[in-house]
Image (cartoon, rainbow, N blue to C red; front, side):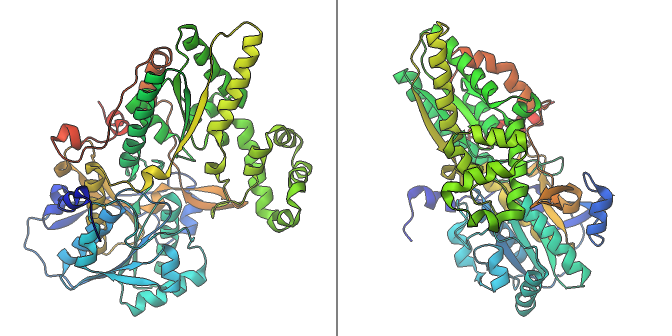
Length: 549
């Protein structure tokens, strides 16, 4: 396979490791844990893996004990995120460090590969080809949910055939929830296999006190910020367009907020604030239009607006509508599909409660249609299909035209729309993500060596130099609560939303008026892979603010 000069150079990069992982490790047991909420319900569902202690790895100064070779299976689950290949490389090197005869098997195209017994053995030659590269193409990924006993049993067949001692599932909150359920099931039947999770998602919503950030977030936001910076440079040069830019992040606004901190746009909408202030869609439109008008009064008919992908779901009235739609379609999917497509809108209007029916009927036909499209595997609206950036641009234009007739606005408004999503999911990982992911993989191997199951690999103290990072393991049940999915209450890892009283949002809130009225753009440029640490190894602005004193 022909490689670019950057690929060749990146292949030679040696990820930095926490001090403990550079030597022989010993396990330090912490306090026992409980779930973040709904403790009794979670404990009842996970009797064998609930209440486990936190684990930390430290340097073992004693004599190295000879260990037996271990065989490990690995699965990439869900959407791609930069650094996944380094997690696998870290697991591989960790398995070989335990014993040179250990093996790593990759299940192909996600959890489906485990159920259908599609796998490859990952060798030195394969691993070396993918070190420090973006994408998940080493074994592929998929969104099959592991939630049926039949799936678990089929997976156990190949696990036993290959003498696999442990399974590592690399994924987001839903995938790691599935990993926890799998760990509990195998433990309940005394199956001799451990299950370990690794925290992945560019959305940044799989984090808490133990998981400081999910891998891929750093790289993706740097990629998006580079492109937004390019748009802002063009915006400031042409001085005649308003750019409405939607960014990935369906359940939280971490990406939009991080990009705002990096590029200082004129406007950045934070979905969590919209919900907290009980804002309507018209409130959001009015807020944007007022800033457009203020800038126009200064002769500046240009600007940038950052919009989170999941904004629609956070507008309280829309959230109530979507919740009812989700429940209704979960229980009446076949009946709905049998309705002719040209009659589906009226069918839904007739089935909803009065307020939601009225709101649904008021939506543009394209948005109404997108809200009723097929759900994702978790029963959620596919918000990435809703063109919120175009909707807001059109609605702001309509409001400004009305204000112009009333003499409240003098200016020109030319909106352009963009959606940055897939551009960031498979980028070559930043040094931070390359290091972090490799450390997560090596930590997962240490957790396997420690003989535990139902844990998630954790690396903390991430704003310090990599040598000072703290590696360990967190019981996955500790992060769980009960939520409604497909019309039923299910145990899931609690998503981390933007905290409005947190330091990242508070800093943004203190600056946004200045950024709105003036042109304060920052142009970050591309990710830097080579050079001094202050240029190449910086964590996200979010992490720096969260961990600032």
